[in-house]
Image (tube, rainbow, N blue to C red; front, side, top):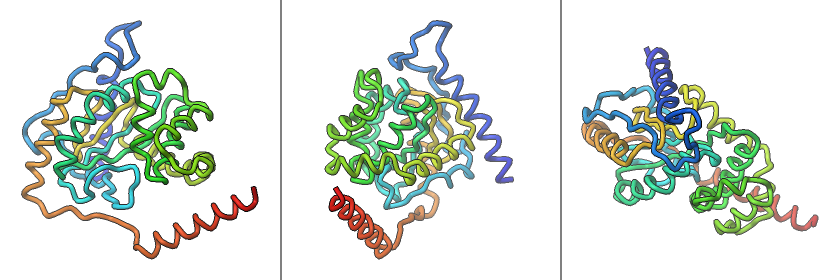
Length: 267
């Protein structure tokens, strides 16, 4: 039953992902400055929701690519690519309003998933965003990379360093090592595999407490989904959160510090 439920949701998300982000006609503007077709979101808290998909929310307090309380009643998971114009539109026009209305109030948590689908520069930008996150600057990097006109400048190595600097990443040498490191590649690959398992075929794609939404939809589509999910959450137990033991995190940080210090001494 669980497998069949996920499979059905994957098919629906795949179809909605295509329908929600395809150009209106041949030769239509694909820069992301035009809105995709509005999603039909029911006010019924249970309509269009697949409980099995709620498990995709990590709710990890140590997740550096997440925003909001780990125990928030609603989790919005975003699968996106930094070279995607529609993703940039959502990041500039809709996400800040969602943060102000729901994240700051403790109702919503946003969990980012790197879902690069536009080639090598997309992959590099995804790894760079993860690397910025390791120094606590993911969302600042996210804002810089999605600024109006930013994607037109590309995401080559020099440009990524400039974005990291703009985002206030303190250690640019570490940022460069992390961007090219195996840990970043594994993290991005893990996010990609999750997106593909859901049937996502284009970006952005979203899950709101198990409800698939595709495309840079109007604010109303997200508020309806979040309000319905928040209402449904009132009748359920408080969600469980995850985090690594403090000593394990400290040990990892100590190991990182030793490696960084050794690298500096070598230079």
